[in-house]
Length: 191
Ligand code: AMP
Image 1 (spheres, rainbow, N blue to C red):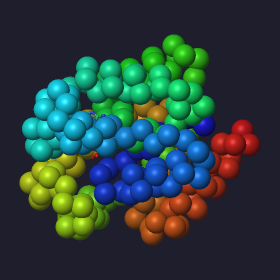
Image 2 (cartoon, rainbow, N blue to C red):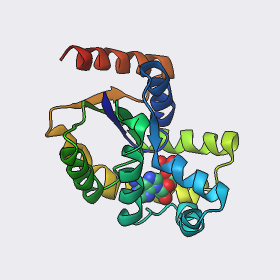
Image 3 (tube, helix red, strand yellow):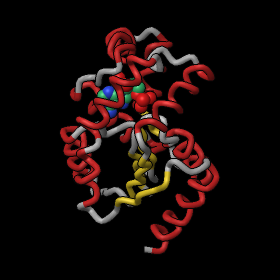
Image 4 (cartoon, rainbow, N blue to C red):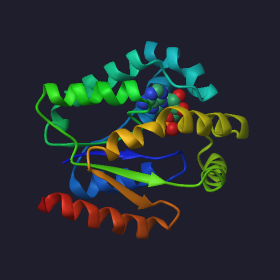
């Protein structure tokens, strides 16, 4: 299965994506995690993107698309994947469509975790305390949500047009949302 999770920060998509990855034996491919790993390892990429992540802005498409293109070519992604945090704008969505078309693959489902801003902000602030993420300060959270609405939210329509968008109730508790995910993926499996 080739899956994508979409939604604002704080919607729980990372948590759900990890659970799906474990249960369905798919690699969890998170661009945010990949950038944070590069920063922690002090690589050239890490040095380049560290200030961008700290500010809440988006890393340039060229870098991000190249990173995903490489990662999707890894042997563990041949049987499927779950993408988290990519695409983040229309250009990245187009690039992903092209990448997948070139290798004769397509997305089976786009799981859309929708959430009101006030709930997203509250969840991100409490995560800041739990995880100590550098980009979970109130100013940066506000900026990241603004970028989500301006750049990422429009691609919901890109994916709705495919008929494969699965809207989920991200405001509910983790287990309830996960059972919605399982219902949706059961239907994908039977298609
Ligand atoms: P995340 O963990 O998905 O919230 O990502 C953390 C940060 O990494 C974002 O605020 C961006 O700075 C950067 N980032 C992650 N994914 C992308 C992407 N697809 N395009 C551009 N920047 C990204």
